[in-house]
Image (cartoon, rainbow over all chains, first blue to last red; front, top):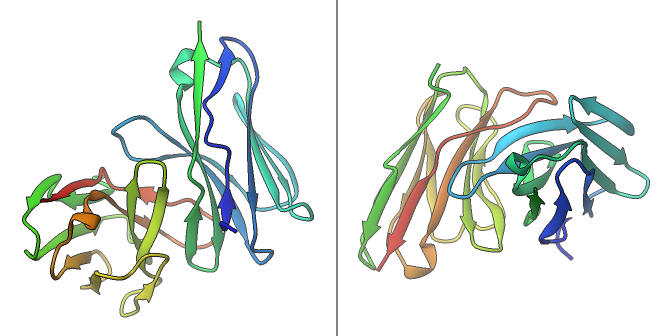
Length: 109
Length: 112
């Protein structure tokens, strides 16, 4: 079992819709959870992180964490074509940050 | 601020050659990391350094060595390159606490 699992996609949504990206993790001792966006040929850039159960909102992005279910998600509201990228979920335990394989999101006009 | 700087950006090696990938950060971060990224595999942790003077293995350490030269610099060495080490290598750093990780722009390495 991989430590961090994501559906590879692609997830296709129309412009203006809500995109929902999901991630599960295996280590119950994980402490904080990150969402990165990566455009093709570029380095990952941090969207947001969360470490407490519940929701955390930042602009069009909402991260949701459920530690009991070992589940973290990212919602993107009012999706734009510029949001088309690979979204990487990452989980930190002490000093190690482990990534999932990423979900490719396609937002079509 | 430059953030995290990696050199070189591109490199082609022959099988068996050695090389060192350099990484430096100017954010006074304590922790530094080396990842590799292959198509369909996401980012996999090679080695990390939680603080100056310490290094630890990650998920895929075989074939690599690292040196935390000082607080700013963390290098990755391939002693005898193999085609399986063809990849994009990313360096990252983190200040500590619950905060995020900052990535460099990557080194694209091809071993022929």
